[in-house]
Length: 385
Image 1 (cartoon, rainbow, N blue to C red):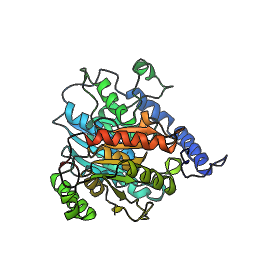
Image 2 (image 1 turned 180 degrees about the vertical axis):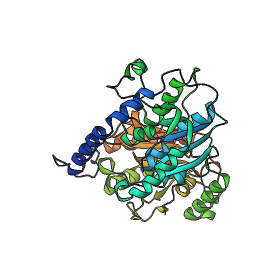
Image 3 (image 1 turned 60 degrees about the vertical axis):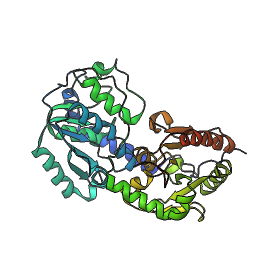
Image 4 (image 1 turned 120 degrees about the vertical axis):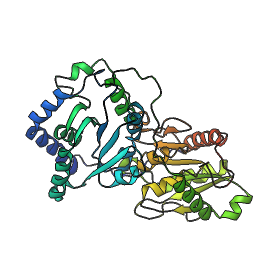
């Protein structure tokens, strides 16, 4: 039997939302073209970023999505490694950055841009004025083709400004012979390393939330209660978290997940599934599975960190799970695993397009067997703290 298609409606030929987004981008580009061109000429060239003297750093990633915010954690780690005496400010979208980076020692402040700028103009103006009052040694636009990120780079005062140049701009030739990596999380790290005045050859840092021991302890206690502490202690299982939600075409139907989990449990009878509920709080799997619900991303991460493995479609929670250190398997039906898949450690991705259900389950089963042989059990409710 072939894999059931992800549950989504076929997009109409003329999507009003996308049409408005394209129009908005053209209007912004037209209104701020001169400013954007000036900023493009100010960008740091490869090899021109000094090794010393960088103490105040600003990272611009004004996006409210959980996954896009988690994906800048390798960049933060690289800044902390190259400039261990530096202090970092972050511009994020919504309040997700404040929640994720609250425990990060080098992060001084997270500026949270409103998700709907047009509805919160005064709050946005106040935030931009705060940014203008500070002077940075280095400001980084951590994304590619983000007009909001590039406008922030234009507004702030910094000795060095770093970002991928406009392919049609005057700085494009300086970067044309430097092919960027495909994975989204690695691009900003590569950008920083290429601009850095010394060569860096170590592997790209993994996603990492820097969970505290108290958070992991609380996660273990919650997971033990969910699974039933006495039973888990006397008959340990492999605890696998499942998140059965995603946005748009990346989402698999509830029927797809029920069949996938049923077939996987038939192959792996010792596996205990924990259903992690989406923000809407509705259960998309069978009620027989243990479940956990929270709207706090760090609490969710703390519980996932105590599991043996995690499986989901390509979504923000998948990136969150990978950032806890728990081996994470991403299922991809439309997006690119090379660009968005969890990398490093025991992480893996399966491109489910043109695969039958049996093939997907077999691949997941093989991955779980490899994961189970990795020495990360604590003998109680999943991974070591």
